[in-house]
Image 1 (cartoon, one colour):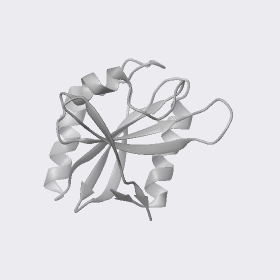
Image 2 (cartoon, one colour):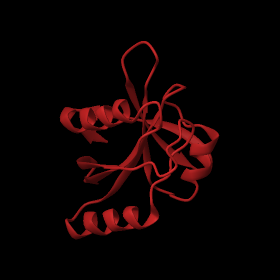
Image 3 (cartoon, one colour):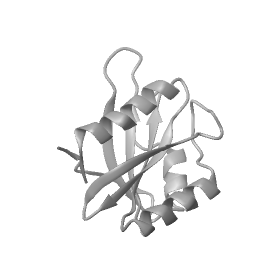
Length: 132
């Protein structure tokens, strides 16, 4: 996926702002490029997992489609581990086949980092995140 530096910076700022809890949100896209990011509330307010309100998520997806976009990715942060899908992430991804995942790692000491994944049938494949 191609993503503008400003959009990725929005995602990272959201992760930093919500720490020590995980943040979450969605990325709208078209033709392999992110067109917008939408921060959502982690309704479980947990440092170990995230949950997006189902009605809010469905409303965002409807809005994306009305604007000619699609749900390109779901993003969230890891505040206590590397930005690699956890078992909890794999379980959640099983409900969203075809959706890609952007994970932001927030280390105690150091700069946040983002990685991008495809998760299909429990298998994790890192995908290219091209920042423009």
